Length: 533
Image (cartoon, rainbow, N blue to C red; front, side, top):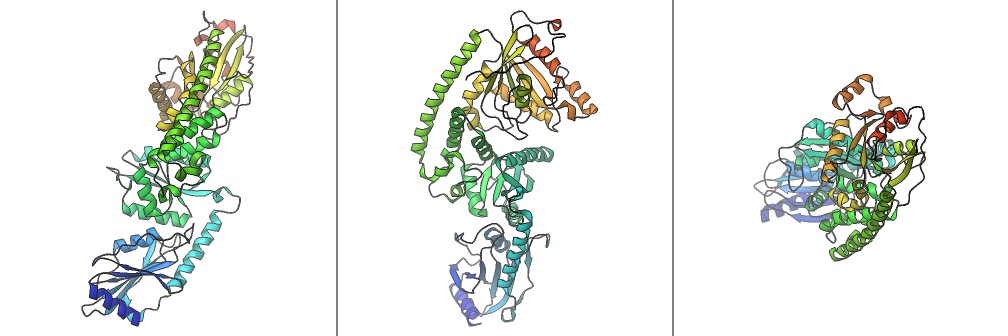
């Protein structure tokens, strides 16, 4: 009682709001002096912060009027995960009058993430705020146990996917589907997804503070520690978002770079990924930056990420220069190997296509190889070259390179130039598309755009519709009406491979061409010894 009177008198005396952050033992841990109409809470320690846990602090502050809790009060409670927030009003006589209070709610308890309690006279408060907070954490812990059983996929790092754009909602949802597949490949479990269409992206936070508060409570309820944006975020946006939400912030580019870091196997691949990561990091490096410190380890922090805060910009530039020099040597050796193959007079046929379209599976089926082929994005990064032998002593060099994707990060495009140069020497491109994918038209268009950006649009091309055996006849007729020259195949079952081989033999520059009768009755016999890079 006396403390409340003293707090009200002090606040009225200086004409400013005064706030107390109180721990669960009832001890004030911080005293804050604000402005007449508001209070600013400084950066708080994160010792208790974790998935499904609250701050362990409640805020009690004064209002120099009879105003109830403001939107800013409630937003602070959400963003900071406070146990509760309360406002003690002060009357004209500098005496305490009314207490307004609110606390967070457990998952599924209400449409709103918090409950505003009825106002009560300051001397008749009987709410046990500590018991409320403990009960909420118990509920969150039970939800977390259900979501993340030990060893399950859900026990992986959890993320909320976020898309903010002025694009049509259908396009945003499709892009989020792809982001979800990327997240799964990287080892993230998707807890929820949020789509917001805006006329103009907020340059500071991407989205408004109200939506950020919604994201905060979604993350709290679902046990997610990461916000994954389907945008490329500026350094300042990552920093601002991390400071406001106190969550790990990742964007699409970071996620793709992390996947490449996981899948790179050869020296060349690892160097290219490291250079791309360093180029992405360079403008974002701020010493002691809390936003970047949250990327240490885990998704988005592989490769050079373990030493991000120890490497300054000068050392990054030096490392990039060394990598460029080493990659130049690798390119020289690859160019020499390509020249040797060209000298042998063998046509070079390169497989291109969207990631996970089935290029590696097609290479394995045609050549009897065992190149890594998995049903996930970017399973193959390093270029693979095999010799493909046809009847009548015909041979071609068949190459498989990294798959494409929409919005392929510019850092990767530049870093993987050494890999993509394999395509420049191709005499024929076999563009593999996943006929069963609902976004197949967009994926074909994306591959064509990237080929155009690389200056490869003039190379002859065969469009292959893979996974033909799993689509309906109606869908097949629709695709062939749009792409009448396409060759339907199933790389897994070998369906349609002979028409594809016939087309390759017709289009590859053997120096005289091949007639259909040249391969009739001979069947398909292919050999695939690895060709040194």
